[in-house]
Length: 450
Image (cartoon, rainbow, N blue to C red; front, side):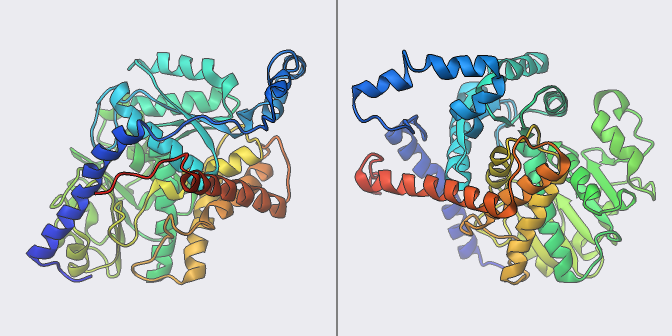
């Protein structure tokens, strides 16, 4: 990737601003991004005697006798709730529940189009984690799973941990588990590309928020030695002397105790010296990470700079400084590490086997399958993970997740690998064809011209 000229940079900036301009035209045009439509046949008005009263009483009584039948008689088995309090939305921060809804609706259509998963976005007018937890538990009978979204730290950790322990359907926080799964997939392939052993690499991590904490947990379970991780927050490296974290940030304090075997004290520049990998999810850049820090890393360094909307350092600057491969969170650069590669397929697999939870091992199984898709197509410096256009990613992830859930004993339904692939593929294909058909028939009107 060559260094861009000032003109090319201006063109890139103009391109980056275009989606926001289009969004302000198309959101009010469509008045939102999702709707509810029937999935049953309605041949004439007599059918309402089946779908509503008096016929509906029979499935109601069957569910009353066995609540698990709610996954059979209703759409609960394919419906999740995208739940937020709007306290940490994208790069916008605490913008409130109403302002978070365009993001939640966007999440819902990604789930549907990429994974065939039906979603109901709900934004809560509370910042109290206990009230959030109570509300989610009250809603549990209506949904087959929950995707927690855009919740501020540190309460996001307690909310996720509590709900995963106390609810009997999958509860997932995409900023934690989703980011971790896709980042781990990219890391696995990056290390294959440069020929380094995941168990031996030194990993510097910039940012100690929900994403990097979860990434570290998944990477450790996936083979990275915790001894070889040095994580930094805004005050410097995490080490056993950071006792001020004991009470308020137990997740950071945990990292202080299990990582950084050298007990390095200093800044991210110190942590990056001789590191094989940098994983940064911190403050939007550029110029947060300096080229000279990358030059001080080990030979064939792997650099993930994933702040949005602008990475901590421009990719071409990182490459010029000596990085072998660079990944970002942006779709207009190679190697986009994007949650959308993970959550649709992972939830598809969890729902298809009616799983009670989504374990870290299920996330790792999905990540390894995601990495395998790219490996099958040939790894390159600019192709570490697939893109959302590679539709086979999602059914393949679903199969990996479903099989792992069955293996771990958290699935209510047992199927073969072949059955899972057929089911996931058909569901996702149906969702995509439905959207295309509605556009063709005019039920989704054509967007206004520029």
